[in-house]
Amino acid sequence: MKLIYNFAWDDFCSFYLEAIKPQQNTAIASQQKDACIAIFEKICIILHPFMPFITEEIWHQLKERKEGDDCFKAAYHVEKLSSREVIEEITELRSVLTSTKDLRNKYGVKNAVAVPLAILPNEGISLIKNEGCFLLLKKLGNFSEVNFTSTEVADAQSFLGLRNKYYLTLPISINIEEEKSKLNKEIEAAKSFISMTEKKLSNEKFVANASPDVVEKERQKLTDGNARLAALEESLKTLG
Image (cartoon, rainbow, N blue to C red):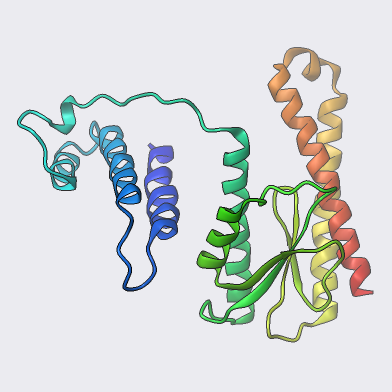
C-alpha cells in the first residue's frame, strides 16, 4: 500500500502533474491530457480494492463513459517496462530538483530567483543528456541556464546525483569552515559505506549464495561510492 501511495502522491501528483503543467495562459496539449487521464485511470484501478467508492466516482468524472464501463470491472493492462536508461534519467532529474530545492531553502533563496546550474559528468557519463530533460529541469527548477562543465565551478554549491556532480550558483556568501566541516563528515560517511560494501563483496558465502543481480548491484554501489568519495574529496580540496 505504501508503494501505491508513493506512486500516486509523489510520482503522479507532485512530479508528473507539475511536469506537464502548461505555461500560463496556454492550454494543455490534447495528447498530454489523454496520457494523463490514462495514468489516472490506472491509479483508480490499483486503488479500487482499498478505496472502492471514491475511485468509482473519480473514474466516471475523468471522461464520458458508456453504460457498464465501471472501475470495478476494469482490468489493469500490464505493459512493457520502460528502459532502464529512461528510469535512471528521471530519477537523476528528480534528485537534482530535490537537492537544489534543499539548497535554496538552506540559504533562503526563493524559487522565483533564477540561478545557473552546471553539470560535471562523471568520467564522461551523463544521465541528463536530452533536450527534454534540460527543458524540464529549467522549468521545474527555475534555472537561468543549464550547462555542462569539465572543471569545478568556483563559488557554487555542489552536490552529487546518481553519477554526475552539480554546481548551483546562488547569490550568497558561505562560511568556508562550516562547509569544510560538513564535507569532512560526508567523507567519513562515504568511507564507512565503501568499507561495508567491500566487506560484503569479500564474503565468499554472500557472493556464492546471492543472485547475480544482487551481487552486481553491490558492485555498482561500490563503484558509485568510490565516485562519490572522490567528488567529496575534490570539493574539500577546492575549498583549500
